[in-house]
Length: 250
Image (cartoon, rainbow, N blue to C red; front, side, top):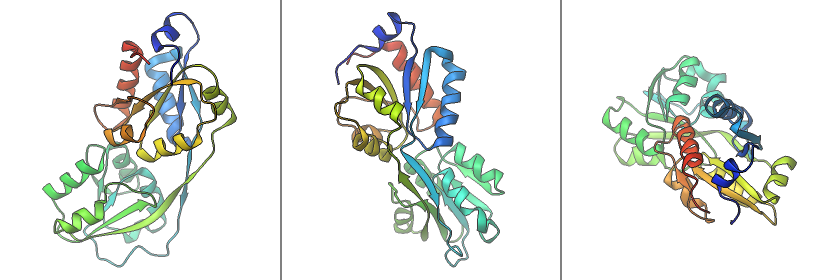
């Protein structure tokens, strides 16, 4: 989508560059705070969550016993709280933030590097001595339970939450209808899918996509995306900063 370059937006106008945040509300607010801490008033976060976590309430986890539980998001941790006492103490977590959430809930945690590939590799390098339980969302990528089971470590999965799609906020829709640069950090392939489906017609904004992974970038068909060096929030902040500094052409 053609438009002003990011360099022009930052050099010719004192207005802050808008950053469209589409994660669930609490995660978008946390990232907005991190943006302000790092970049001050040069960026203007615009929050428009395209997903809302709805926690499901199964009466019991699947029958065990299990040697460890697997969390691939902090929402899995939160959904498990009603029956935390019935779960094993050891929790394998996809990344550091999920591990902090699980640790606060009383789990003994081991964290991977932020994606399903690193999580599977970490578990296979030091597997617990017994079956595993993956508490996950309705939508998933990576086939964690199936791949661990095929590798000789029986793993069951239980769906404990779903991410219900939400429409763009009026503010976000209006932003996308106007010409001008908009930075869009995307934290998952599903976020990319939902944003593509929600784009207004016409979308005149010059979207600068910052993707948390190559898999997320591949979902976006409108042009090249900047991919973070690691699949975590710190690397996403770094990628936003690099995008501002280098001002890639449209």
